[in-house]
Length: 270
Picture 1: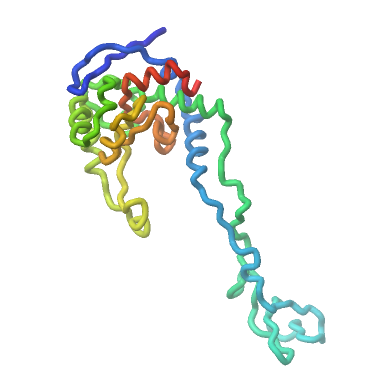
Picture 2 (picture 1 turned 90 degrees about the vertical axis):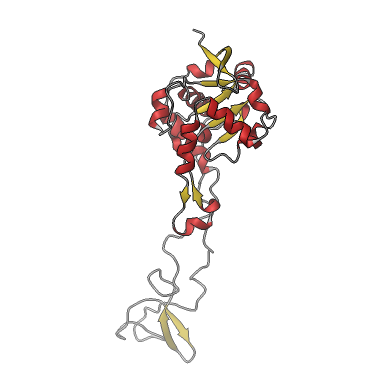
């Protein structure tokens, strides 16, 4: 069954109809989407590990023999490795994990496998499922997006949207499409990060708002990059992280007509 949706112009008025590609017919699989999200997020992890000899570079040694050189037994002290002191004496406990300057019991190891692997077909199925979720009003509202009554998803705009190069023009077009309430939500919810995180990632936290998917970048990416919570990307470069931030599907998405053609003609994520 071929599904058709309206195509809107920059003024918010319908200018025609277009067919939805087969990717929008994929069944909703939240388990696959969450798995693909964790796989993509894990690729940014950096290996870390402790110095192999940390806490071990000491003269400390345990002498267990009775009535022997540097004996520790029957001296009223704990039977633990102690520093060697010139003249035959012993110093403080070292080396063991619970001692001062001792080694760690289970230090982080750089050989640990950090990336969560996922099958190629499984990942594509997750992307198709996330694409179909952008056409589900209940999932979009469950994510916290604010929709006006006139919006019908999936929201498709004319290809002239890809040629916008000014922020004010992109903002005007999105407002005409009835998305001003969600843009306002993202702008007002922008707040400073707490603690040490304020020194990282720009110091601010803002919710995800609209995702704009285009077929060819003629200036639209630059025009929308500074709008709070808005992201723009090519149809051929879609990821689960952008379609379903946090692994929760149903992001409010604006598709250009050219982007839908790219999905259909090139069989992307099939």
